[in-house]
Structures are given as structure tokens and as C-alpha cells.
Image (cartoon, rainbow over all chains, first blue to last red; front, side):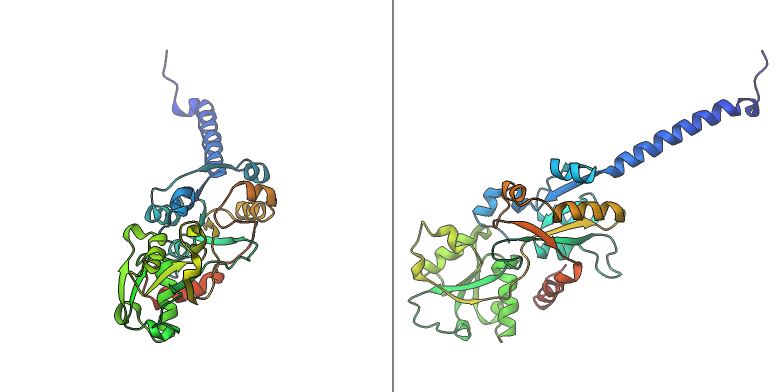
Length: 55
Length: 242
């Protein structure tokens, strides 16, 4: 069977690229939607606060 | 966290820095998106002109029954101290501090002392408290190991069951600053910043109380980066890097 040219395969390939792009965007959006929160270690460790500390 | 997630539709993950330096570094890099810190730490993680463009920007401060500006330093002496009668008398005397990097236990006091013509390390004999403990400064004053001590406000109450507080006199107090700062990484998109800011600022009082933050925080009120310029002036005066 003769090999299909790149152009002949293009519709399939572009669908794959588009799908990958959509997935990539989705995961990027998900990453952006997860944020991190932190309290100063002094607060996170209430005992350290009670016992006196740097601040 | 659940409240914040429900209000903002953003997922939050709590991270724990191992110490102050790591907390500042992660905030500067944006690996901590939202932080709750003291104002000196905040100045160290906020953008700084051309030198540091990325970092955290303040959007709120903790409010208590005593107001939002409830962070200051105190100079304490024994009540029966016959030599130190006024602030100028500490010149040439022995003093204990919490630590050279302690805002409420040295930096605020040194700025205050400089404004009053005294340079603590040069004009007094200063000792750093072992393990940077506030209570050890109080005990050193109480036990006559030192002439005066520098502590953060609120610390005397923590030893009220161990010593007779009538023996301790507050000689002077420094200007007041906001105690706790809410800040957000400045590269997060502005819509999210607005959502998060609003969620914190309208957080119900009972929910804030349930989180048992130090200093009996009642709610959060809006703040801006420029509110911390007085802190920067103190740090400049005391030559502390930020």
C-alpha cells in the first residue's frame, strides 16, 4: 500500500494537534485556578508564637 | 479554605515554609500566591522599585478590638529602678533585646531610640535573648540581670501567671504599625486578585474567630502597599535589608 503523503494525513493530524492544544489550555487554566496560601511559620506554629519568637 | 474556595471558585492549597527566609523567598517567586505575614516580612517580599519587580502586594490587614495598628515595641524596666526615670536615662545602661532581626523586640525600639538621640548598640550594652525568646527578656528585667528590656507589645500578658507584673514598668512605647498583612503575588491576574481580596474582606467574623489567629483577629480590612511605607522608613533607619 502506498504511503500517504503528509498533506493527505493533515486532517487527522490537525485534529490531534487541536485536541492536544485544548487539553493543554485546559490544564493551564486548571493550574492557574489552583493557588497556594501560606501563613508565616510563626503563625502556623502557634506554640512558637506563645513561647516568644523573632517577631 | 473551604469558605475561600466557595467564594472565589479557586482551589487553594496550603503550603508551609520551614522558616521566615523560605517564606519570603517563596512569596517573591510566586510559589506562595497568598500570604499572611507580619509587616516587616511583607516589606521584604513586596516589589522594590527596579531592584525587585515581582513579589507580593498587600490587600488587607487584620483588625482587632484594639484596631489594625496593634504592633509596636516596648521598653520595660523594673518598677523600683532608681536610676532610669526617663527614656534618656537608658544611655550607658545594660539592655536585653529579643534578637537583632526582631521587629517588635529590637528594630522598632532602635528606630525609636535613634529618633531620641540614642543608638542602642553604641550607647548601651546590648545582650540578645537566648533563642530569641521574648519571655526571657522580661525575666532578665524582672530578675535584675539587665537595666531595661525591649519586647513586643502583648508579651507581658503571656507571663502574668509567672511573675508579679506590678514589678515591671513600661518606660516607653514605639509608634504603632499594622500587625498582620494579607498579600497576593502581583503576577496573578487582576480578576482573581479582586475575587480573593473581596472574599477575605467580607469573611464573616465568626469564621475569622474560629481560625484562632494570634492577636484575637476580628476581621480583615482593606490595605495598600503604601500603608507600609512607615515600616520601610523604620527599616531604612535601622539599616535592615528588605
